[in-house]
Image (cartoon, rainbow over all chains, first blue to last red):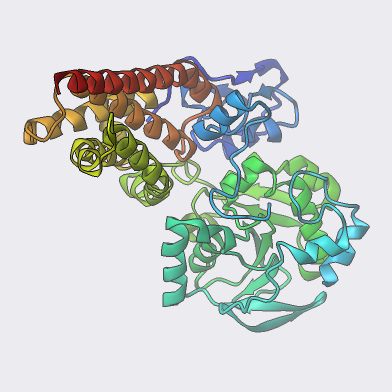
Length: 96
Length: 385
């Protein structure tokens, strides 16, 4: 299953890669793979912008506009303004 | 309460929006604490250099299964917690593996079940009863909390090695390099699914491509539908009220008979639209055409209406009302289908934003227009009387 084509904000600078392989280890969609001791992007459209690779890349080779992909949160922030958050209290007076 | 002391020595955890632990010692105990809970999965304790650590079973009881059902279907999930901290599985030694997890009890239960027959340590982070992936996205399953929890549990005294195994999806919130710098512990991101842990350990801590890939099977999608249907159905009475008022309104006042018989098809179609958007679309997801969720929902909404019209043509609204129905209900189905992007394992924020830019104005237009059509229909019938 793939989401919309050519919409993903993932950017990868191959020149900064030191070949540690963290991005391959953390990506749940196999967007990265190692080739000749460097990470390579296989299919950008598979990226779901979770941000795990960017957070864990020590060499700042990866950037992605990560955030919640839930429509309700985004609609709320469109209408009310502010940062979209999926309130952890889907229902009830959750404390957080 | 001994944990609080260590939190303080680490400095106050970041003052984010969460209410727990932001204002120091007192508040941490008051609102999110689950200390009063009896944890039925604890069966004694093991002695360590850092004091006794509760020992847990790897089997589930019927109350664990019932808890899973309840938390899968409603707000109970927000109160389904285990106490954060260190636990022992089997007879762990200072050389045993440490598995880090969330304090959402369902997550914790799935992990302990996967560790059957092993000797290991389990470190539960305080994620406020949220699963690993969502908590990592929110930052509660995060670098700060992990570093704090490591020192609170005095992990460096309990184990001789310096390695932690985290669920892979925790990488969204945990910066491994930062943890190493701050605590000396090396982070290995294990498999996505806890059930792959035994194979991962046997395979010398190497992940196969399958172990690091998230899937979204039919069963995965089915399990999520109660939480799509329930919130939608909770709003249904408001829709019903609006429909009954609109249909019951006559020059002579609000007539119950008109409200009921005129509104009935719309009430039924409302339920069909909810079912198509919150159940059928998620379940049939890969088989519904288009990648856009708004379009998937639209297709399913029109299909559901067309099927109903073919099955019961005399029941289906006619004339202007038919047009109104075909405008309103597919829009509703589309809206509900778009909501499901928040629960999938593969949709990203940029795509959802792109969809919303077109979809939200379209939803407003469709619903506004359908209300106008219903009003026009009412005038039509009044004039004929």
